[in-house]
Length: 133
Image 1 (cartoon, rainbow, N blue to C red):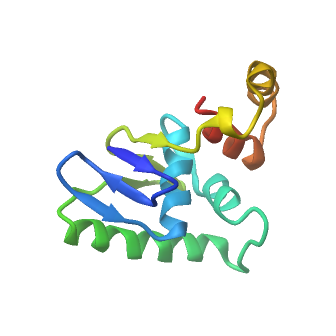
Image 2 (image 1 turned 90 degrees about the horizontal axis):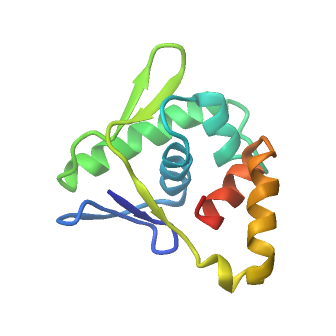
């Protein structure tokens, strides 16, 4: 599966689905982490700047809107909810983002990657996704 952040699409090579901005952030967060991701981390990633009053419920609504949209487009279920509030992807998703060289000078990219790998939190996760790490 390929998630194109700029185009807001998800494709498996045969089918393509147009994604809402919240769906893109959800899939981008899960794709950036291998294995299980706790819903609190996902909520922080999606709504870091302006979290809703009940972020867990908002995430549930986001999932409930994405699943039927994917089913209508012919995709098999992609996100699995697990006990304890964890989410996983049922298959790998490759994230395609903006070209980092267009945003940051090339000589700064290695330093930025090194810093971000040592920095916890949603902001670092977003930047690592942009860097393609």
